[in-house]
Amino acid sequence: MLYDQFTPRLNVWKANISAIQECAAKTDWFVDTSLSVEEAWSVFKGKFS
Image 1 (cartoon, rainbow, N blue to C red):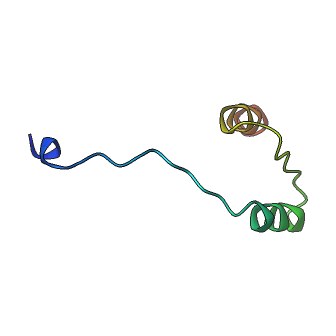
Image 2: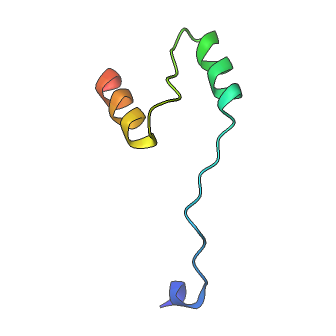
Image 3: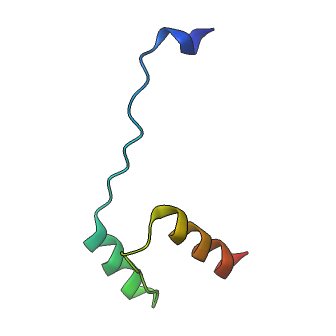
């Protein structure tokens, strides 16, 4: 298969936390940076599902 010909890249996610917090503040959202990505996703899904 075609994807077998490529070297996989590391699964690294980097975020500009201060920019996210600033944007969230403008929309009256709270961003808890102590949560893991999985925990934050669960909170998000719970609010908007």
